[in-house]
Amino acid sequence: MILNNGFFIQSNQQINSTDSGQFSIARSNCSKLDLYVLKLPFDQRQNVKMRCDQLKYDSKHLQAGLLAAQQKRARREAAASEREQLLNRRFAPNPEVTAINIDYAVQHQNSLQNSHRGIDEMIYTGSNTLEMLRSQRVTLKGAQRKIMDMANTLGLSNHTMRLIEKRVREDKVILILGIVITLSVIILVIIYFT
Image 1 (cartoon, one colour):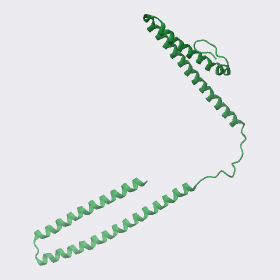
Image 2 (cartoon, one colour; image 1 turned 90 degrees about the vertical axis):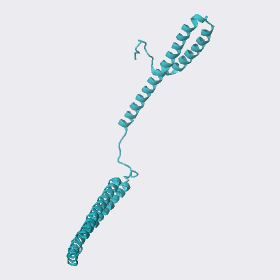
Image 3 (cartoon, rainbow, N blue to C red; image 1 turned 180 degrees about the horizontal axis):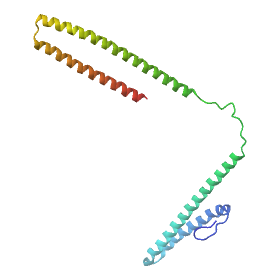
Image 4 (tube, rainbow, N blue to C red; image 1 turned 45 degrees about the vertical axis):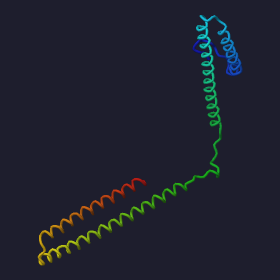
């Protein structure tokens, strides 16, 4: 392998055995340089200190790069080893220990069926209630006509009749609002639980 600066790298085993020793030597040399920097004249100290810090930084950078390269190589070797093991493995039928757990799916299906039955019952109850309300409406309209006829015969004033009709309209609005609110709550509950 060739690095960017043109140096050749020896085999991976030789690098692994010598890198820790070389980096420890570099660290000890940098520590010695720090001591020597303090013994230099003041006017040269800053320039030499900057170079010494640059050497420390380069050493740490090279050590981190080497560690990253070793980890990358180890990952590649592990992947190659796993690939080789997979290619050499003989496949056999599944042992009897392997079982598919379908209990969760059965419970889920039962819950869906129960929900479906519940919704069907709610629709059936709602349609029955609607039919009862229609029949009551017809009955109440007939009763209203009879009351109007009796009121006309009894001589109730037009003002009283208007108040009664106004009350009936207000009751219709309240009923419609109640139905709309109830249906919206039911729809929100269904959306929330699905």
